[in-house]
Length: 235
Image (cartoon, rainbow, N blue to C red; front, side, top):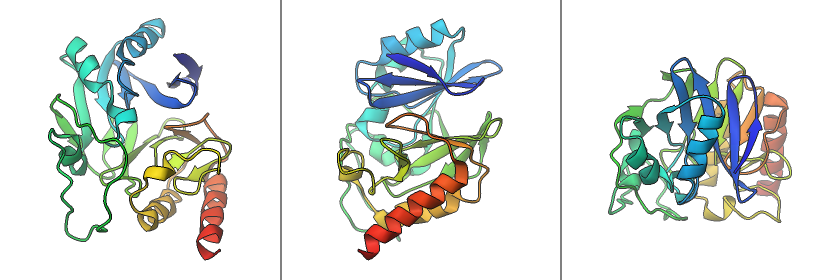
């Protein structure tokens, strides 16, 4: 697992060259954002140890297996960790997975690997809540219940699969032709555009996504990604 520093407060952990999760330092240890594919637990723990801290919290951007795959492995080793997700993600994290639509949601089937987890979520996050140093922002589109997390200390947005950083910064669903995931398993493109529009209201400096290297450019880069998406829709 490759460890790449993002700022004084955070590190990107990359497995297989393309799947990212993140360690964010808080006063009492680390918050882990996402857990990668199954089998990543030992490498995540080793990364945290090498950086001089223990994992105190795990927060999930959404329920796809490449983001929650090592939750149970980690929770088995770290039973006191606070496991966190959005309330809307709970049915998609359950076993069996509950894919029931809620009132007002697009009636489009969910795509992608939804394996659920055995571990119980111990805390849910709400839109606009401050969770440690992370501002919690509801960004549905790729999947219901998707959240992004903005580190207000340095402007890093941990965007999960709301955005993709392969080749360039893109709204998921409008990524480069040579990288089909995660756009291939998109739920609602209109909601993805609406979520990106909402992110323009936040003081974002750089983007740390589930796939690809960290990208700078802040809201200017986000506006460009929106233009690309809108042009593709018109075309």
